[in-house]
Length: 574
Image (tube, rainbow, N blue to C red; front, side):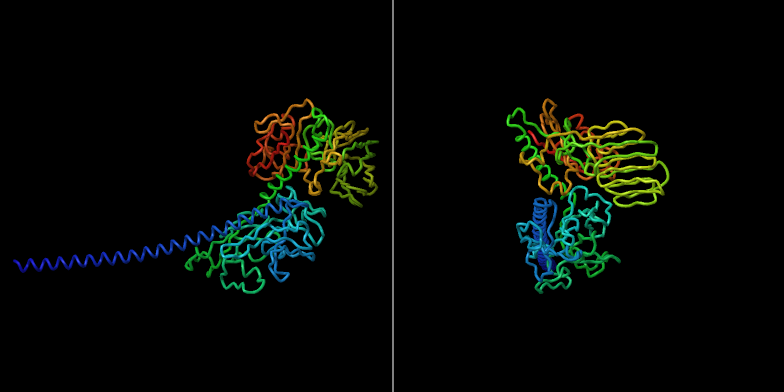
């Protein structure tokens, strides 16, 4: 019995020792796994910290670029050319090219130092030198819509009208183009569209990948920026060849194993990017416009009369009058009166059913349109164009069909020897009589036998033209047609004060009306807004704002922008 007992004790001892060994081995294995996990965690944490640093640099550079563009002294919204290696280096300066334009000029490193000749003013830089977590300078691509056109020695017209697609090939330039180039596009890792309204892109290249070699003095973009292939499609950030160039937010290579056949392997990509949309840029420019106009209106109020009790804000001009923004006596809401004060008179005479004349200077209207009663025109000359029965003249010219003729001279004296009706567009008239009529003074229609008159009465208010008031808008304001995108309302004399978002006692305010909302969801108008128009619902985006000229009530000054609301309200006083 004793012998059996000793044998069992020894066996139990060996079992206990073996268990201890297993526990020890498990502990050691656990330590190894923990060390591995800790190492992986530390690597992930380090990567996250690096990415955070990179995105902080990208965000700061974006804000600096926005501020630079919006504060531009000559054309708010104009952006610099990038720093390219075309001059043999990357020195932080904007490299402006005066020869034949190429899209490749719009991609390079961010010009942090400044601009040198032949760049247009300002010559200052962005105020910082931001780099990604690997120490690389940031890269930058900009839309052709927002850079100076050195080939034609002019800057683009930058205002909300350039926001809307579709875009024609004709640029939104001073040469007569009415639409902008397509905006840049940003795509996601799958090639899906993130935005097709991109004004500029800022990129962080990260560490060299896929055989990139940055040892040369000024390497090409392909040594910094990456590309990848998915199926038959190739996406890359290293080339700029078209107006609507694509840039891609790809997946970092560290997150895509070689076994992931979603992409064509080897997958090598580590670019990071942020972008600025034209909507972001324009909303910020509009704030500058609102402040600028408010300052000038306040200056006019102070200068209008030495006696404080008699001081006043100017009368408004007629909305939609893109040729004549002169004030109208008694008008307390409408367009800014940016044109010099003047009076004018135009006339129409229907001599018979087939004979008529008109007299209205092309300094007062954009065009005179004659529509024949029957049969199409077949020939045109000079500053007249025809489409079927309609002849549109913006200066001296003629439209004919055999002996039938509509003709205008340079002074705006027009006549027809055929039956038809007249329309005078783009004016601003506050009195219409006889055989002429209007909905709001911007466009005048005349027809029939007899006479008609349309006039603009004398108004002495000149807040933006009379140098004695020291209230002159900067040249860029009217050069970029901002008067087409600003609404103005004021109290004068015993007229009631205004209200915005429940705030009462306002004596003057302005509204930047933004771009026309032409796609679903529409503004409160319920259909596409049309500019230029004297109908407030074509400019204002809610029923409250669109009826403000009658009710003196407007929306909140800080109402958020959305797809169907882009009005910005600025209280001038108090």
